[in-house]
Image 1 (cartoon, helix red, strand yellow):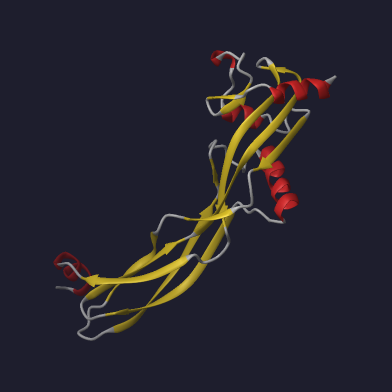
Image 2 (cartoon, helix red, strand yellow):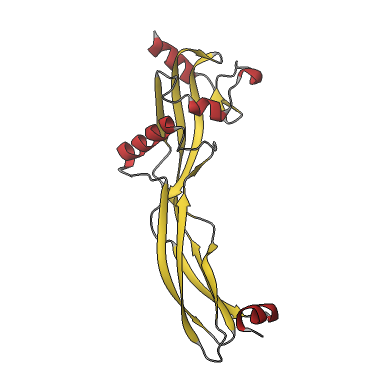
Length: 203
């Protein structure tokens, strides 16, 4: 009986409401939020699975400064070291913390491992000491642009009893997480401002 219900549900035209795919007969005020629905995965469902649209793809993260700036107050170029540590963390389209709602995260990780042999991680910390050639009376700094992995797909959830009027719910979902490498690290220099020269070089 449940199999026939599922087949009928999949056969109807699905329409998006609040980011959730459901049968057209559902009323908007009966629709749970994406967060509420995802939190039910493994904690109120008979079945919860994730169907990826394809393998994870590399996407660039936001470039940002790492470590502190270094100031060359001498009259000759200097090699100066910047030691830094930078942590990349996961994010998702629903905004649910994977540290708290572990049910859906385990389902997601298992699906990617089975489908593509990929081990998904929540965080990655990169530590380096980067040398910069800083010209006389200039300031140097380091930026890093992390490499992230993104995958999209759909969570499929089955309920033993109707949940907001339906046995079956489908939730589009996108997850972005660290690749686990250094990304792109760059060195930069520029002339000090007069205020910086006073603050760091005494005038």
